[in-house]
Length: 331
Image 1 (tube, rainbow, N blue to C red):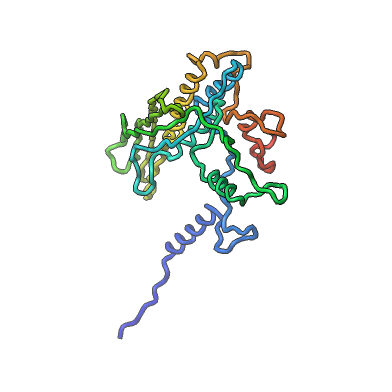
Image 2: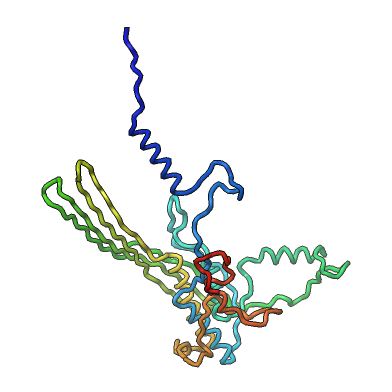
């Protein structure tokens, strides 16, 4: 008759399980039961909202200031669809290039002081017009309804259309790797590597006069994007143990920010053409009339706001929670 021997649990497995549990606890306090705040975990990160300028944002705002000080009438601009024609997409990540190029162009025209009329998304306006036509929208006065007035919607002088036409991978890449170590297998070994690669993005835009449909300006721009990768590793035997340590870093210039930069440069050149500005020297004045540090927009304040709050919009600490100690004292 065979005797069954009771196997003892492996101490190593218990230790590994304890270490894993401790690691999960340290990485973040996650509970299967919601806490008093109604959340299972507290989200990480406390970076404040900041402005999103490009190297051409200040030039756009400067162009608007120059037009006002010179007495030029700002044209009414409508932005149509600026689509992605590259066809580049990932199986898991979706489209490689932003689908919001039209929104970037609208922001660029706003910085340049252009008068914008909405033509990109008129769904709400069309629904309001339908309700008003059926006398369903009332005003503050009792027993009245909103009147439809002919000619109440201003027309555009020009409209912008085009598309993102290029996204070229690996225009040029270069890399180097080195392995250093003694022939003795027990001696430490090391490796180091570095890579650089370049891609680019391009777009074609055209400015069309609304009444005649004449194309008055066409611009084709591209911008190169660089990425880098650095790695370092060490392999060694010590006291019967194996140590394999590797560190590295990878960074790439944002593709979508590159698209925004190309759009802002194109809009800047088109507005300079409309304002009859031959070069960018008008923004090099030092009298403070033309130059500005506001890169978020250039709209005038509406009543009852009296002070121009444009520069305050890019203050990192503006409206920030006063309990945030990282920004305390900056207001």
